[in-house]
Image (cartoon, rainbow, N blue to C red; front, side):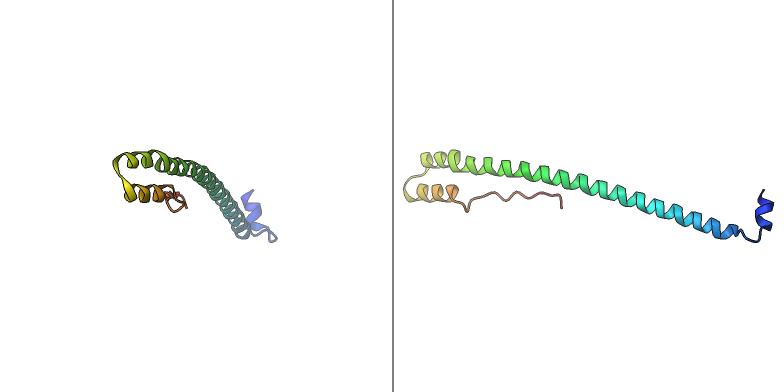
Length: 103
């Protein structure tokens, strides 16, 4: 059969082979793009979940600092020093800076 194709003036095997290879390359490119998009989506989902966890931890840390640590300071410190420590730990300025390592 290959002899028939080689002698057929209307069939260019080299051109058909090139077209086939280009079609395969394009399919591979599309598959790679799909894989990359799937990985990006997975990473974004992990990032969202991690941010929610970090916010919960941040709230717990702020609550701990505002209540437990303040009460401990009140026992150990007196006067204006205790008041300043309490103000600082219960103020809005005191917030742990927890950032997600996923970018």
